[in-house]
Image (cartoon, rainbow, N blue to C red; front, side):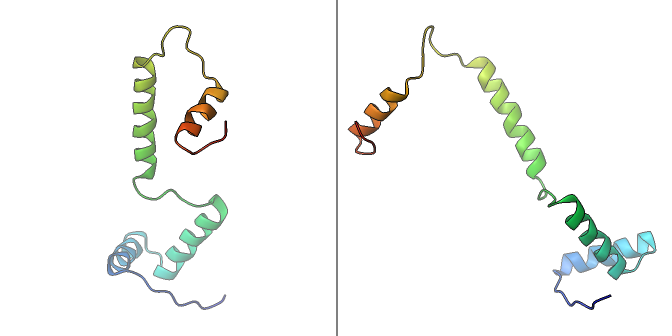
Length: 92
């Protein structure tokens, strides 16, 4: 094994100590397990991101069910370029 030194926030230290007592594993072993999980399973979503994304997608679904475009409406790329040129942002 290779020795590494790292800095933890105070709350991380307290939670690590508590988890070590609860599981009977050393703090070092818990850090190794967490690192293994991160390296083998990819990056974990940040706290709250999964719930925020789920909420956003649900709201987007609700909006899409309520909002309808006018009958016969069709997106035309050329119209977009013409509109942008009025603002000085595009060619045409």
